Length: 102
Picture (tube, rainbow, N blue to C red):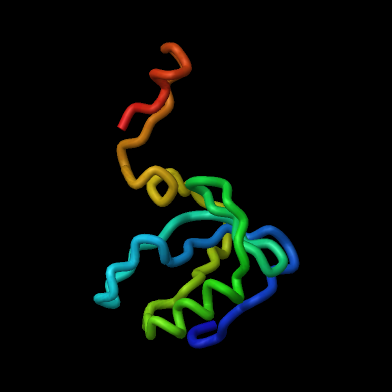
């Protein structure tokens, strides 16, 4: 699949995709976890839905060499990609506003 820009996902697929909003222009990229379905991405961080072709257009325009969207073969834990922290844990023994322990 290297070099192929997959624009359509027949079934919901877990992916990581370039965090285009925080790209600094040095060709170093960070990824965000989410779900690709049809020609859209659902962000695992904010829930925003956006176009896969539009993401590829930005990646091409900015000459980013890293893959824009990387699908996972199986469903995995994306906690670190979503929260930015490998130590993210949810505690059910506390008040709801205290459930995010970074």
